[in-house]
Length: 466
Ligand code: SAH
Picture 1: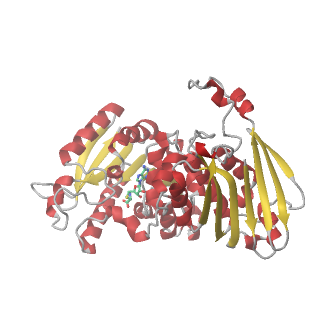
Picture 2: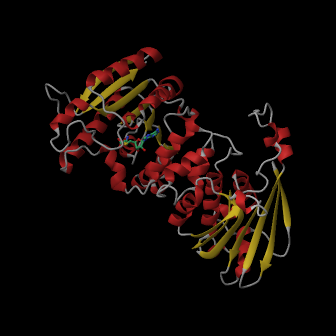
Picture 3: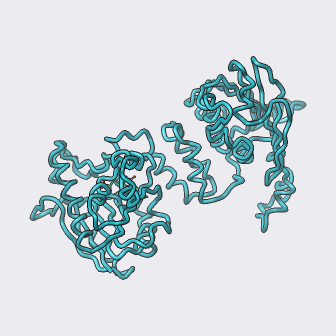
């Protein structure tokens, strides 16, 4: 398969510095599935074109695969389009051969790395599964001018009609690393065939290479689904993270907590009461090593830091952006070393087992469970109660019964659009008692906020001890 990238920026051969590949010579790189060749068909000060030619060895791939699935088309594994069209193999080649350029580095001329350059990509045979409209919907929102010419199935037999492949040109003015990131993510998406890679770290790669553009992309969901095609278990996780990253301003990040009572007074008071109650439980538990799971902007972490009893503090959240805000709010870069060493922030998801959460005395999970899809709760239960297994766990969640007290909240609506459920007191108790029984904890319940005789308090808190 062939791809070329052309720069017409002044001193166009600077492309060689960015890619760390000398325009004066051809080079070859061996990959696990074949060979990549890099060479420059044109290299002048006005115009410089780099070609990446990737040879895929389909026979080698078949040999390397144990117990390959026979789909009733035994020849397909030997005779297919994989050697000829951009796909996940091209992404892997880009990441291998142009790794520093993809990461946004440029050792010799650092000023070039973030400089928008007039760049044109040519892909002589690009699979456009989903049609030209889909191709355009992927690249045009990113600022590309897209030219596509559908290739005939066989040029000797025009009656046979068009093939699924198009000759595509993409032109835009942008930093090279961004262009490479777009190609890295979107080539497999367009191809939509079985992907070469498999691995838990794919979500992280998608987040890394999608940084700064994927969260706000109008086709974000479709891109994610296709990119993680054969890993349905990862798709929800990725969509959740992207939604969390999507242009969240600090106020919006705080939003999940915004109770519908508009005036900031009562809302803040409830928030303070909630954190105060959690602190009281954790302090009296005698814990010294504490977790804040789904820590958000780090309000509770700030209180933890002030409490000397807590010598080791870990805050985890699924949203990287939120963690950045937490880190700024807590001025982590300015804390004196002994303070700084007490606190760690981690990106991670509460629905995946995570060894970094083991060995703590207590965990707080404040206004988080209602953000998890109900079918994922079972996974969360095991992650926290079976594997992390601290002695004390405090979980808070809204009490749905109290919603009638908020006039601004239409009947039957949740307090926040990202809430997947809101439980009555009976529902929360039933869940908490069952979890406690299953994992050997004891559960007790405390109201948080003004308590109404009929509907209870706005926030409900479960304290689990073992
Ligand atoms: N506990 C914080 C924030 C509550 S808002 C506070 O009281 O201020 C809910 C938080 O849960 C958000 O920051 C969201 O990013 C996080 N979250 C949602 N799903 C998560 C998951 N699967 N794993 C970890 N954090 C998650």
